[in-house]
Length: 280
Length: 183
Image (cartoon, rainbow over all chains, first blue to last red):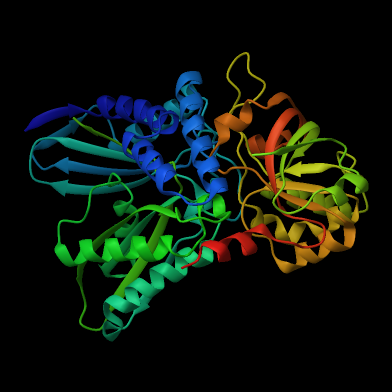
């Protein structure tokens, strides 16, 4: 068994919280530059140009890209040959988030109870998903999730007979309803199959994939391509002020499902599309 | 693009001069307020008490900024999504509020209230929060400090960039522009 001290995980979370919120990913910057060339709306081009400038200011002045520095969503893959020592891993993750949000001057956006709504003051707790995997490493992915886009999420239990068309229609309809609200240009995460919770989980996990990477399964890759085209034909454009850059990418993930069902979930990321990954 | 310069207060005359599609640089005083603050503002009005600021000819910016770093007036400060304030907006318009800055759609009740009371809905670029912060020169909490990022702040802004999305006649840029690019 390889021993890993949870303090290392805490430190990683602290650093990732700051990095994810201050630096726009290379994949996103590339997508901005590509779409600025292709955007037919002058207002749209101007907005994309300002987003590139915003990324530059955030980087040089070490300020968050967006004031909504999100709720920390953490995916942890623990190798089954790892022995975690030095404390409780969940406490370590939350402590790392707490330190990162404090040290990085990031906004504390979490309330302790969804109905009483008192701010916890340190952006914890994080939403954490654990997975046990083969090997002797720990892989941690942090995705700070802003709620302008999160609020546009939808889930539908389609009939098996609805098929590919049903999936595509539901996703395009969801983006159409969201309109300007999730800060387009967006990244669209789609989860197909499993159960209601599995589909939703997959739609969020899909958002941790870099722009430009596609699903390895051919028919899912085709759906990603068709969805991206249909979404960009909606005309919503940057910030909803018209144009052909509504989405920068559509990422689809799928899982086996029941003979009676076809669950489809959609989770949207704003253009910041923040996620960081470390392997310990 | 051609910008119109506008200074606060946003009087009725200035409102009439602004049309959907205008890009505006705002200079002067604006107030912040989002979900939790709006709930308190409306509770205050329902109790017949005074608002923490004079709403007449004022502008509210829907924002919860990130914390200011040492030596800075404010952290990143882009707009939040406006529809969550829709049910809590018309009473403020009735009190003379003439401007709102946010992002995203408004419902018909708000648009009708804007037409009746002559008000403007501006959009700022969602996610351009570091860029927008550059136009905010001073920030002071004037109410509800316990709400943290949701406290009401008085901001002094210079050339704050915004677009008129819905004007006082109800013209709505979100509807007109999207149609032009729809395939």
